[in-house]
Image (cartoon, rainbow, N blue to C red):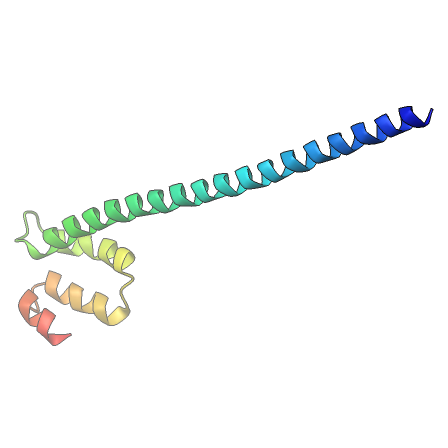
Length: 111
């Protein structure tokens, strides 16, 4: 009877040790997976930033290039305002450039 209880106790200890080992492995695996998720999120943010940077460059180049259609610069001001988070003075300055009231080089040195 006692030997049977000793065996059951040993078996319970083995199960506990296995469970603790499995728990440790799962904790480590969870940590690794979380690190991988964070890395992938950073990579995605970088890709989005690069795409936005390329788009912003294109918009700025269109703004400083000669207009191909009437009021092209005026249509670009809301886009630039949003992307660059411009304040009212900066928006007014871009509007003056778009309307031809201020030349682009003068506007750059004025701010």
